[in-house]
Length: 293
Image 1: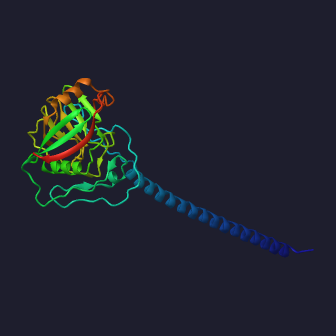
Image 2: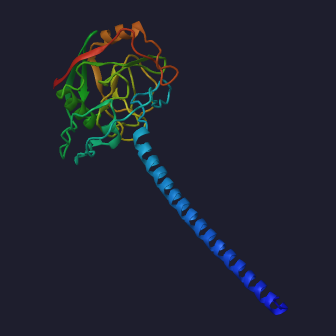
């Protein structure tokens, strides 16, 4: 029969074994917790990287580019008429080094509405004097615009370049407004959506004294600096616009054609913003050619 001392020794050994088992179990539990924590940390880092990449990529792909057109208000603002979707850019943007600085953007290269015709020549000294004729053969009759280099030399140079590339041939005049503050026909977008143009933009060339009177032809823009493209508008009657649109010339032949188009009205599809709609009497530019004045 074991003595009291022996029983105490046996109980002590049993307690020591229990403590060792508990310590080992606690150690294994800590290892499991550490492994789980490490896995969660990795997942959080991967998730954060994915969100950053997705956000950056999404901004490039979904950033809308506003429609290049004036609104019907006294102080016009450009407004998109549809949500843009973009395809993958094929190359890096380009820019000329002359005074006009025709510049492409990655967004314009991805747009399904723009047409790549290269960049206009940008000489070290852009001509700032003289005039030339832009003859538009439309489905409603001939319209001739006298372009004035002194008013907007870069825009006039760009118009001539685009015409030489047959950029405007077959393009519809997609918007018309006949309101008291804005009376005009807008053309120059081969896509017919109001969102198209070449892949390049140029700066606005506007004097603070600019007035948009009957017969004036001016370039549309997005409402942002350096956003003039290919779209232009021909004014039916004196319009109340802030001096934000480059005036390139005046209609010298064909005001009767424009009056016929204006009288037929528009379908109101751009109301309430940016105003107006598609001309009911459809207008398409068959050819656009620049000749010496």
